[in-house]
Image (cartoon, rainbow, N blue to C red; front, side):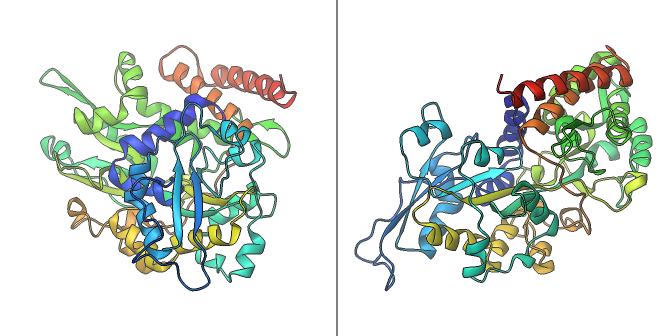
Length: 444
């Protein structure tokens, strides 16, 4: 996504609200590394034969990663595996943004991105087709979840600008304590959105002067990662698609949940979804990142089931939200950089991360089944919601698509706040998006 508002909101959710497990995802999927605390070559760290000491520089555009975080999550593992490598991470901050680093001639070797930030590769000419490295190093790309590969191939015009090292996945989290309080049965696997809507109606109520909500969600994620693969914009035809029936059906599906309680609550539902579910415990269900409660301190009993299905797309989970690592076009250590990325995609490393609570980007059933097994809070919980049989194809996430999805979010806000009807709001949003996209293409 190009627009900063949605990018930052999405990344804030991923890196701050989701907790430890999602922070791990960010690291695996492209968080940077730290110079502080790394092992220098010397006694006990003699580089392997034929391996000269080398510094590998990581950046993760538009994220709040710190050196300390990356070393703890990924950097130490890299240096343990490759003793001749010194990991250097450059945090994204004022003066060290991508444009600043390029202007200063700073070497960059590995770039960590998500679907929200991957456009920085092409925006700054850092994209590099890793196909030749994949072939040279004998990396088996068929081990990866297909939809994650399909997305990067499409983004790379048939090439491979990065490899997915982890992914976010959306599930339906629920507060067991609230369902018990009101004597209502828990959500089940395989439900449709219509069935969950009926359940949400039952759980939306006022009790003892407290307003409870049946379901909350981050609508920016639900629109951008929707299960119908309804794109907001088609970069091939230059068409804004948020007025199309498929996208409109996604909007209508979620709008009804926001309208179950009085209109006065719509603003809170749009902005306080995490607090309503976790802190205030006034929301019965939460459609969000499945890893959000993996390392939760356990203030209430919770459960998770697979995201409900659209009737026209039964069995299709929401689009994955992968993290990628890319070898920078400017790197003078491309082979070493690729070896590091390949290691992060090894069965050994992916199993370790899966057990800690990162959703693997591999197809391996064993690695998927090991999800969060080292997390005490996850003991006894099903791994099925975190290993869908099928996920929706990932829609375009370039800069121009970001403009369109941002306008769609604005339209959604107007709809649930009662400021506009669906057709009018989406029509106005589509016109505004088309105008802004054209100006962007013209460089205005």
